Length: 302
Ligand SMILES: NC(=[NH2+])NCCC[C@H](N)C(=O)O
Ligand SMILES: [Mn+2]
Ligand SMILES: [Mn+2]
Image (cartoon, rainbow, N blue to C red; front, side, top):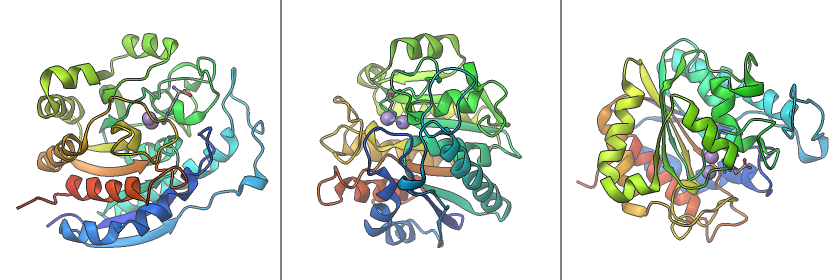
């Protein structure tokens, strides 16, 4: 029997260039999330969404980083702080938080919450490194920065609300990387984070790569957080995302990866991000997200 699962929505799109991922939580719920999770054997409760300021109330320049550019940092901080508390409370109740985004900046909230009273490993399924900082970011979009924020890199050093207490670089694995900015490449190489690119998946196959990623994340930790950016998949499988990149994993590879996550039995918290219903086709990306969540929670073909 899977741990009781509590759904928490974080309906924001401050961190992304293209509007629409704020509707992700609705689309994923509408795509049949609760039924999928029950199929996986999980008892499901829906905690609703964290409060998010409306577009009209936003000020892109309200809170500035020490240097560089990070748009809507004040709003991102407010939402992530609330989300972090909800995730920590859910874990304290011995339930599994399933966070629905929203753009990937919400990972700052989910992971700080998950790593508050525990040593946590992190598996980051993504086409992107999300390793920019306010000075290296080409866009100023915070969804390209959450990993650097959580690890306290660059201008994020000592930024308490954004740094994850119980997370060490050695326990972070990025899987499926294929779009990296120049400064990000350097920063990832300099860090202790393990990055598995699409070329690694070409060479070794998804099974071996995910096994290795899970070894990295589980080594010496109390459990793992899995952050699934839907642009990890090839845009043919997941068209409803704001920053699609060709050459991603296919449908079966994605399921296989999350089935392997379930087998490890170390899952502490999970999030599904970057679903953009405006750009989607008949909600297929949101439905796919629900299926992958079910695989991560232990749903099997037979
Ligand atoms: N979570 C994402 N979809 N991130 C995309 C980041 C794109 C680019 N590297 C940037 O920093 O702007
Ligand atoms: Mn991405
Ligand atoms: Mn991402």
